[in-house]
Image 1 (cartoon, rainbow, N blue to C red):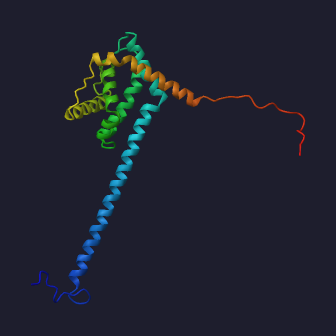
Image 2 (image 1 turned 60 degrees about the vertical axis):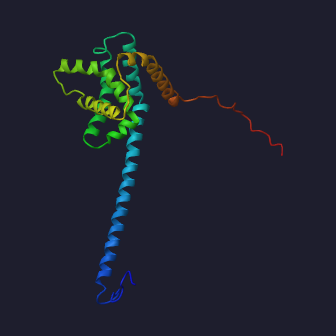
Image 3 (image 1 turned 90 degrees about the horizontal axis):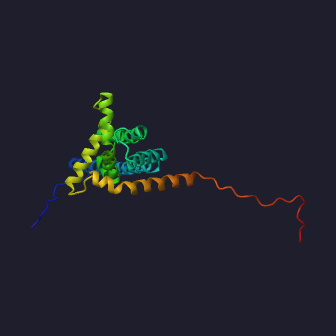
Length: 214
């Protein structure tokens, strides 16, 4: 008993159209799959570049480091967080506002921010929220740092969906304030050491040519 009847089938010449149509379909399918794979690889490479850039900007910018330190020290010293270190707060807020806008516009995946900088984002929104709200009231503009606030909210939603229970309340902020100051100081020292130029004395110069012993 024949399971497949090949009688009358032609691969070349009249009657072979079915074969060439099928072959074209297979070639197109393989090509589309190859394009899909290439796009996925490019997307993965782009995501890695984005994550690296975000981490570098946040962790390696000395200007941001010094701004973070100024905000933290003001808080440690009991200054009103809504009115102290405004320039430094604005520097940090502008960074997160830019990230929030890029996420909201679809240029950066929210998952990347969540995985690589989610804790830092929520922590700094908790520290800067009083300042942002005060500036909004003073300027009469409720949209100041709106993308920063929006992204912090979305990252918090992702935390809850993942079952995370960490709360960035005043008790948490107080408990981690000094360690955050120490980390900022260490990071600044590291950047200063990277820029440092080591100067060593030259070997003593001789005014007469050395005699060859050969």
